[in-house]
Image (cartoon, rainbow, N blue to C red; front, side):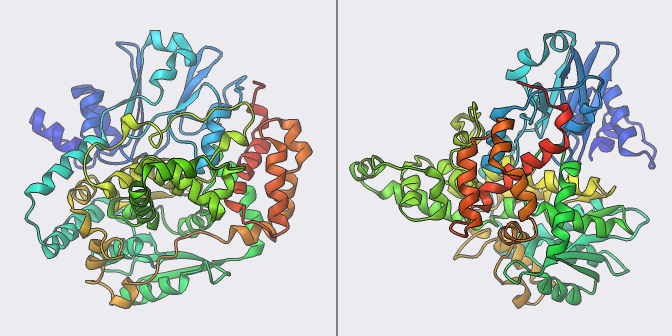
Length: 562
């Protein structure tokens, strides 16, 4: 973080070189206040500060949401902690399920800040600070709803707009831009390196993790230890690629194949690791990878952030293509097609006419991209007595007002999926094993540079992450760089039809669903029956419900009746 530099510059005093981050924060807050200190923080943090003079509680979270922070009210008292379950330990704690937040889980696979799974409990939003004075604390959760999540001390939208404006004055060639990115990434990796300990990195064999590992290895005199988890289903396994990359970079590599018989044990641990229901199925191999690393290391490097900053998702282009296609369609024809009846919007995910009709109903690029990321297209059909809250996707006042269409979809992903999804996955999995996860691609300087790049340097001619791949080619042969993207998703559909079937069948029992009263048992029962019969691939719909059901079963004592 830049707090040390700011302290020394403004107060002309040196700070002890061995001072840790917590000491630096306290010194800076005492001298400069909370807001100015946060402005200079570019690391990962979840911060709680009690101002005993003004009787104010300050709560803050880092810019990308790498670290969690929850707060809320119980029996008139203000609680805060790094997890919802840490609040469950407060004497007499009980709070009802937030059915509205449950709809967000079904749509996105996570519950975005400031919402949480329980009423009266909020998450501090990434890049935000919450100020709770005596009046706010006494007013309680109901009065706090409009201020939930806090006020921004750092605004990604402002930084992105400023970086986009810089493009008009940039004269960097592709080679010069690649060289500058290399310098920034080397600096970011150096800042993240553990002192006096061997370095470790996750290595999937994809562009992002391979590049971070390559830079890390170039700074190390000893082999970096790399880790990958593969699957015994070749359609989901890319561990052979990771082996080849590790061989070329000369790392000390560990590969583990996650097999069917391990899935049941892993899934049973998920409600203890993720304090809220969380439904990105890659959480399972991530949790296993963290366990492998933690045997000998206290920190690990990741490639997170590369997709969101450098145009890495194929869904971006599909959204751009579909938005351009529907914009060219004559308005009368579009209105006529929109009026055709649609019995079940969820079947739009399965293709055909329902999918086409959904695209025709999308009236903005943001709406088209929302269709790409939605698990459930209409989650309020499945959750009883619920209304889906607005999010960045559906609140046009918060959309990016600058840049080209590619910038707009990447902004949505950076603000929504990165902090609420990707970082939630990796941080909780690491914390479960005492492992500190470090993501140099999300360094503030790297992110700002990525936003300043013209879109063709990130995507052109069907090639995603062009500049990252150009840089990676300085470390690896082209055949290991230019290859199809596979991702890190496990074979969930096969697992649910195989080793996880008894577990899922018990959680989705229709009588149980009716008794608990959160889901429409008929709607859920139908898609579960179709899945078991092999007629539909409904695992994307079922996984969020299963994660909630498993979480509810584990934490039922802390749930109050609504």
